[in-house]
Image (cartoon, rainbow, N blue to C red; front, side):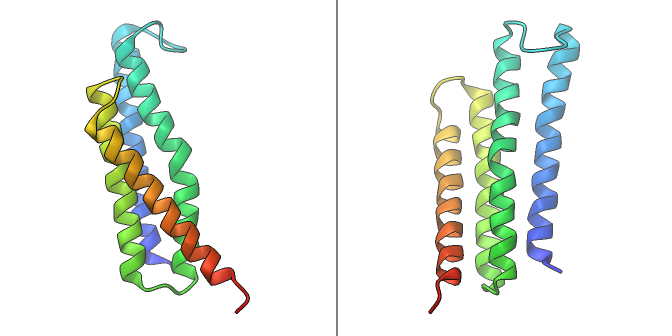
Length: 129
């Protein structure tokens, strides 16, 4: 059982549910059933949730493959924690500003770094030597 990936997948699911709840709260308060109805606050929340759903699946599959490939659990924990913290930072940054923010910058940077290290580890493991 890939327990490290299970841990970070569970935590990322909780983050997704939190972000989805933030969308629902504004939708109900502003009575917007579809789209964003011109609400800037709702648009930011929708994008924070959507951005997480765009990145988390491939990142978690990569994390799972790194763990199943036999890499040390410390590396898997480092990648999983980087992903979780980065996605939370990105969502927080987007909640603060529709423009640039430190949270969005570091969230994007951390997510891309995690993906790059994950990709490198998987390519390395897959090489035929």
